[in-house]
Image (cartoon, rainbow, N blue to C red; front, side, top):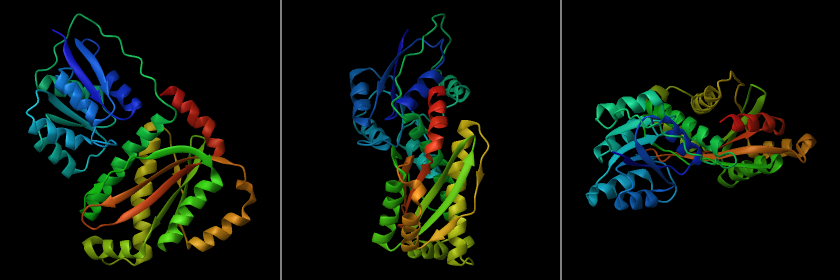
Amino acid sequence: METKVTICDDSSFAQRQVERALPENWDVQVNFASDGGEALKAVRSGAAEILFLDLTMPGLPGLEVLKQIRHDNLDTMVFVVSADVQPEQIELAQSLGALAFLPKPLKKSELIEKLEEFGLFSPSEKIRDHQSIEVTSYDWMQELFNVSLGKAAERMNANLKNKFTLPIPRVDVVPLRQARQKIINQALSHNHKLLTQGFSGGEIRGECQMIFSEQALEKITQDSDSWKRMSLSEAANQLAGMINGTLIQSFFDQLDRRYSLSQPVFFNPQDAIDLERSDAMIDGSKCLCVDFSYASDKQRIKLQQQIIFTNDSLTKLNEFGDFF
């Protein structure tokens, strides 16, 4: 008998990944939802006997969907599929009724194992064709960084003993000078420090840019035993390695490419402005810009970051997009 399944994710690329991970010989009708509100409508209409649910979405997030399902005693079985793999998130999702928590990127073998564990999958003679899902421009890039951000948050959580709110990364092609000026202006307006760190691999080059306050670093060194002996400059280097190193490693791992990461360089925002004005080579150049911010729940630390891919990397990135 055909089972009705709904895949809820704001990313069309992530929807396609989950749909392709479903067994081809599983007799299911697959529906899609792009936010929590649509997911609840699918559950209430009977279109989601099984719901594959993302947690980090605009509008109604996944945890609120789980709370509503429990509150209204709705009839569905929920598998959370999320990049936010911090222990607190996994525990909370399961306490709210999720049958299982599956980390992104979703592996077909892990999904089938969980479906069999709960007696939800038995092979059918009917072979299901994969549905055609159009992936919007650079949506795949946003999802790869969504996974990378989850890895970085997990590492920060383990090191700083603090849960971080996972952001939704924004991806856009903009003039290079505009992208750099934006984060410099943010640093100036908050009297923050600016850190940059270059990377390259597989014909892809760029730089990570992060702004943070000395107060945030002081808070980290005060509240974390392993950081107490560090100076602020040492703490900044450690933080950059933790975040940028994890982000870039996860991104290139998903592309199956090797990479290298330079040493971080620190600027006062005004010095960065002077460098920008003297660098005539960036005039007219475009870049692919990914920007986001981390916020901690306990220490009230916020880190603003953007990752810039150079103009000559765009062609290669488009090739990867066609592959995905």
